[in-house]
Length: 210
Image (tube, rainbow, N blue to C red; front, side, top):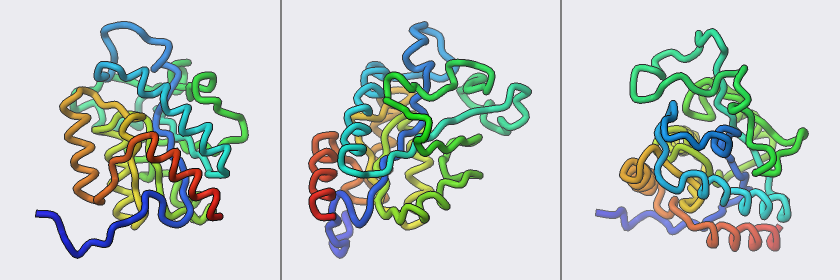
């Protein structure tokens, strides 16, 4: 049963930032059927759609923060990450690990957070950056919905950020896992699941109100 006492929140509360999670070069370069990490059908198209949100954020003065999972070639920093379904991935010396700069319009002076774990908060300076930017709302896109997006959402939620996931611009390891992760995020914050059209309109409104 939904909590009737919860106040309905705006899509953007306070100052937003767009968090672009792990949209890497390999997403667009690797068309093989066998991957180190499973991808749901339509994964590449959903990652490409994130460019719409990136361009709108830039146009409306909203900070864009790119997140890049990367591991050392000797794999010393994988920890328990290979104990499940994932194979070796995102090594520093692999060109597929770079941010998909051409597809996303990534710039050399953009904010970039490199992470060794699923959450963009864990062991990084993301929170310091967010505090410096005076951010209240996190708009999340990228992959995987059920892994890095979900874990970043949870840590953002536990740090008292308003968290929104652009459901057209995220994709999971499978369709069922993707949907279940979206439901889990919606459970934590009512109204977390948002369409790209809703987010674009909210970006415009936020810029107009600034």
